Image 1 (spheres, chains in turn blue, red):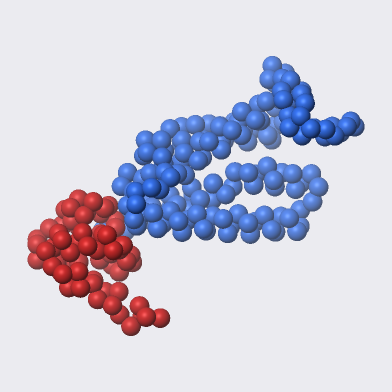
Image 2 (image 1 turned 180 degrees about the vertical axis):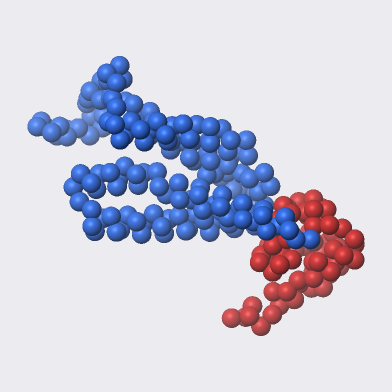
Length: 158
Length: 68
């Protein structure tokens, strides 16, 4: 009955503290293609498809790991922000949570469909990069907006 | 579905905040129920009935639109 797959409330704040800086840094490094040499490493890979080389399974590639680090931080922190309990997580909040999640999935796929049909080649790669994060981002925006609207409307009643 | 939470609350002379604590939900949820914006679960409905010491059917009444 109490099972709801959510994190405790305190993780929401931790999530925001990690999410905001890593999103800003991530966006900046993406735009300026910043890849410091100190973060070039030989790391294991499952699929390898080199530009002018062979394709094979399992091996070692040389890669700049800055984008991996930031991507992981953004995904994990936005999961914390999205799925930590509210201070008073009750059944009504759960309903708003579910509705916001459905809404975010619809919006995300609507944008993806349009992009899929009208954006091509390297531009579409940018769409895919952003698409990794947008579903959670749309959910976070919509859910928090609904909650703040709710708090505001409840303040004036009684 | 109509409900008489506000009336029952007035009878007991408790605020939305008091009722929220008793029913273990947020004040926003009590407010949304009173405004008819949220239909509570069976568990919450039974809790409210117990708090107000009335039958559940005295708090909640079906409307025609609930059959559509």
